[in-house]
Image (cartoon, rainbow, N blue to C red; front, side, top):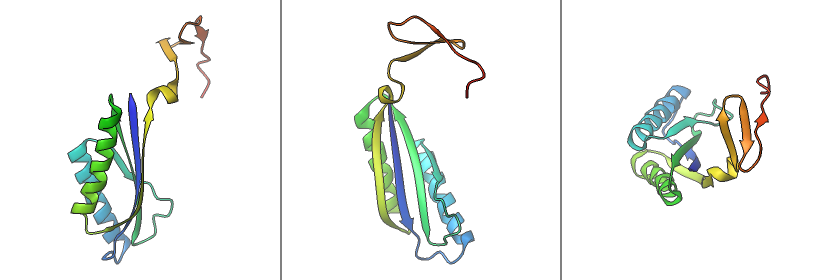
Length: 126
Protein backbone atom coordinates (compact mmCIF):
# COMPACT_ATOMS: atom_id res chain seq x y z
CA UNK A 1 0.00 0.00 0.00
CA UNK A 2 1.23 3.47 -0.88
CA UNK A 3 -0.15 6.73 0.46
CA UNK A 4 0.34 9.87 -1.59
CA UNK A 5 -0.03 13.20 0.18
CA UNK A 6 0.05 16.64 -1.31
CA UNK A 7 -0.22 20.23 -0.20
CA UNK A 8 -0.67 23.16 -2.54
CA UNK A 9 -0.59 26.88 -1.71
CA UNK A 10 -2.86 28.89 -3.98
CA UNK A 11 -3.28 32.63 -4.50
CA UNK A 12 -6.72 33.76 -5.73
CA UNK A 13 -6.28 37.31 -7.13
CA UNK A 14 -9.97 38.02 -7.86
CA UNK A 15 -11.16 37.03 -4.39
CA UNK A 16 -12.49 40.12 -2.61
CA UNK A 17 -14.14 38.45 0.37
CA UNK A 18 -14.19 35.25 2.37
CA UNK A 19 -17.36 34.32 0.51
CA UNK A 20 -15.50 34.53 -2.83
CA UNK A 21 -12.65 32.48 -1.37
CA UNK A 22 -14.97 29.76 -0.05
CA UNK A 23 -16.79 29.60 -3.39
CA UNK A 24 -13.55 29.05 -5.34
CA UNK A 25 -12.12 26.56 -2.84
CA UNK A 26 -15.33 24.56 -2.51
CA UNK A 27 -15.74 24.36 -6.28
CA UNK A 28 -12.11 23.36 -6.83
CA UNK A 29 -12.14 20.72 -4.08
CA UNK A 30 -15.40 19.27 -5.35
CA UNK A 31 -14.10 19.01 -8.94
CA UNK A 32 -10.86 17.35 -7.84
CA UNK A 33 -12.64 14.97 -5.47
CA UNK A 34 -15.06 13.86 -8.19
CA UNK A 35 -12.49 13.55 -10.96
CA UNK A 36 -9.67 11.83 -9.04
CA UNK A 37 -11.57 10.15 -6.18
CA UNK A 38 -9.24 11.59 -3.51
CA UNK A 39 -9.62 13.10 -0.07
CA UNK A 40 -9.15 16.87 -0.25
CA UNK A 41 -9.73 19.83 2.05
CA UNK A 42 -8.76 23.40 2.85
CA UNK A 43 -6.15 22.78 5.54
CA UNK A 44 -4.77 26.27 6.09
CA UNK A 45 -4.40 27.44 9.67
CA UNK A 46 -5.68 30.95 8.93
CA UNK A 47 -9.04 30.61 7.19
CA UNK A 48 -9.60 34.37 7.35
CA UNK A 49 -7.16 35.16 4.53
CA UNK A 50 -9.16 36.27 1.50
CA UNK A 51 -6.68 35.46 -1.25
CA UNK A 52 -4.39 32.73 0.08
CA UNK A 53 -5.42 29.08 0.42
CA UNK A 54 -3.64 25.92 1.54
CA UNK A 55 -5.24 22.75 0.21
CA UNK A 56 -4.24 19.25 1.31
CA UNK A 57 -5.09 16.02 -0.48
CA UNK A 58 -4.27 12.33 -0.27
CA UNK A 59 -4.53 9.21 -2.40
CA UNK A 60 -4.10 5.52 -1.66
CA UNK A 61 -2.79 3.06 -4.23
CA UNK A 62 -1.22 -0.36 -4.48
CA UNK A 63 1.47 1.07 -6.79
CA UNK A 64 3.96 3.82 -5.90
CA UNK A 65 4.19 5.16 -9.46
CA UNK A 66 0.41 5.34 -9.77
CA UNK A 67 0.15 7.34 -6.53
CA UNK A 68 2.81 9.82 -7.72
CA UNK A 69 1.15 10.21 -11.14
CA UNK A 70 -2.19 10.93 -9.44
CA UNK A 71 -0.63 13.62 -7.24
CA UNK A 72 1.06 15.24 -10.23
CA UNK A 73 -2.20 15.07 -12.20
CA UNK A 74 -4.01 16.93 -9.43
CA UNK A 75 -1.40 19.71 -9.51
CA UNK A 76 -1.72 19.93 -13.33
CA UNK A 77 -5.51 20.04 -13.02
CA UNK A 78 -5.29 22.98 -10.61
CA UNK A 79 -2.84 24.81 -12.89
CA UNK A 80 -5.04 24.34 -15.97
CA UNK A 81 -8.57 24.70 -14.62
CA UNK A 82 -8.41 27.12 -11.72
CA UNK A 83 -8.38 30.90 -12.05
CA UNK A 84 -5.66 31.08 -9.45
CA UNK A 85 -1.89 30.98 -9.09
CA UNK A 86 0.00 28.10 -7.49
CA UNK A 87 2.56 29.66 -5.19
CA UNK A 88 4.12 26.42 -3.99
CA UNK A 89 3.32 22.74 -3.67
CA UNK A 90 4.71 19.62 -1.97
CA UNK A 91 3.94 16.01 -2.88
CA UNK A 92 5.21 12.83 -1.29
CA UNK A 93 4.48 9.12 -1.56
CA UNK A 94 4.85 7.09 1.62
CA UNK A 95 5.00 3.30 1.81
CA UNK A 96 2.40 1.77 4.11
CA UNK A 97 5.16 -0.48 5.44
CA UNK A 98 6.91 2.62 6.79
CA UNK A 99 3.79 3.52 8.74
CA UNK A 100 2.76 0.11 9.98
CA UNK A 101 5.98 -1.92 9.73
CA UNK A 102 5.22 -5.57 10.27
CA UNK A 103 2.31 -4.85 12.55
CA UNK A 104 -0.56 -7.32 12.16
CA UNK A 105 -4.00 -7.62 13.72
CA UNK A 106 -5.27 -11.10 14.43
CA UNK A 107 -8.56 -9.79 15.80
CA UNK A 108 -9.78 -6.79 17.77
CA UNK A 109 -8.11 -7.92 20.98
CA UNK A 110 -4.81 -9.34 19.75
CA UNK A 111 -2.03 -7.35 18.16
CA UNK A 112 1.28 -8.85 17.11
CA UNK A 113 4.35 -8.33 14.97
CA UNK A 114 5.18 -10.93 12.36
CA UNK A 115 6.99 -13.94 13.82
CA UNK A 116 6.14 -12.95 17.40
CA UNK A 117 3.66 -14.28 19.91
CA UNK A 118 0.37 -12.35 20.24
CA UNK A 119 0.38 -9.35 22.57
CA UNK A 120 -2.80 -8.40 24.41
CA UNK A 121 -4.05 -4.90 23.63
CA UNK A 122 -5.48 -2.62 26.29
CA UNK A 123 -8.93 -1.66 24.97
CA UNK A 124 -8.83 1.65 26.87
CA UNK A 125 -5.59 2.78 25.23
CA UNK A 126 -6.01 5.74 22.86
